[in-house]
Image 1 (cartoon, rainbow, N blue to C red):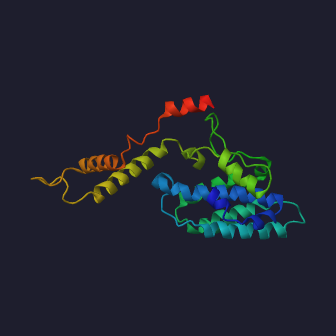
Image 2 (image 1 turned 180 degrees about the horizontal axis):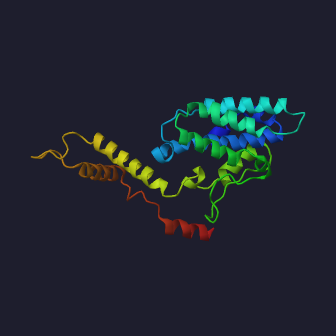
Image 3 (image 1 turned 45 degrees about the vertical axis):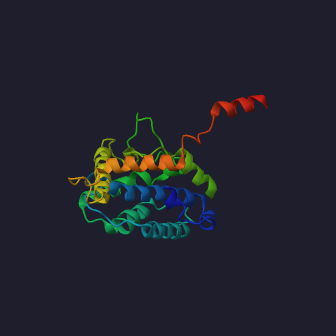
Length: 233
């Protein structure tokens, strides 16, 4: 979310109308959802779509142009924006009908007048004790601060998914980690007849050697002695 928002420069952002600032913030959240759902595999998307920061950039340009052309009416062309974001920019990558339905539905919940009134961005979180709202229009630094301080730890709920959707993702993440560890293990490890021991034994041997060479035990700080000197002062 922060990476998406800071893609827009401070000067570029500060020159925007307050309504555009708010919609851009919502667009950055939408962009983050589109990208991050990919790591959940088929639970996130039925296919692996190549969403990129280029989609965010082009959507921001279209948003600015549409708002400028509709400035006289004072109305936000939500339907036009949703169609461009969901059917052309990001939707141009989507070929599965159910994925297209999700993209359209997510925009219907996000791109509406309530966004200008500090709308709740996380969908389906009633009674879940978690929240992330769109802030009132402010300056560039305050938006970044809002992302850093108000955005909860990552959760599938932010993407409109059940918390259990993370189980498969974390399981696959662990399997990939152990697979990588296995691949970097010395090929002669565990061989019979004094082949050098297992990977765990080699790691333990390395830790002991580092401990001996660095003399970690003798270099430990005497906390009691330091505390007594502080009290004396």
